[in-house]
Amino acid sequence: MNKDVLVNRFNPLEKEFIPENLVKVKLIETPKLKDNMLTFLDEEAYQMFLLFRLEGLYNGVNMIVDSGYRPYEYQKYILNYNLLKKGLSAYKTVALPGQSEHQTGLALDFALIINNMYVDNFDDSFNEVQWIHNNAYKYGFILRYPKGKEDITGFSYECWHLRYVGKDVSYIMHNENILTLEEYHLIKYKNNKKVLVKQK
Image (tube, rainbow, N blue to C red; front, side, top):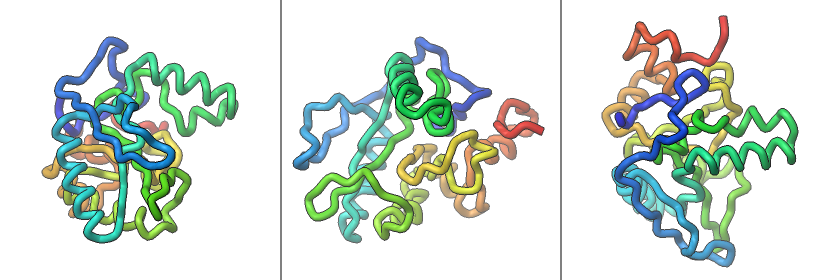
């Protein structure tokens, strides 16, 4: 599987798809988190995240992997739970099974450690979040669902959701100001008519 694989409404994964090279994430223990949760990521993505995290610590930003690989059936459970809790608005933030990037093992949701406390309720007004967004590309990550691109990605803005695409792609997207993976694929694969979520 290519690191820049596009997964969305028009490019779903098979129910049986399980990525190769998954590794267990070493969780950072906090009063809320214990290292007994089975969290996995693509091995290359995880190694680059650890380097990214190391630079973050040097700059006063302590980020951790809060969510990584999700099997098809677990994504189905998350969707059903959110539909019960939020109603149809859940479709704006929770992908259908097979349409979630988390199934690739290349996507992660991050949380922060602030004053030794686990923090997962934040927005882009946090200096830590701004630093992460500004530096993610150096390590092969992109902000997958950016603000103002909801019609293209099909999802609401998620400041916590990073996607590993590899440094070659992340640098191209950064240097050419390509904000979404859909737009990158539209440029790279010009004949792919299943890229964009937005309907004409």
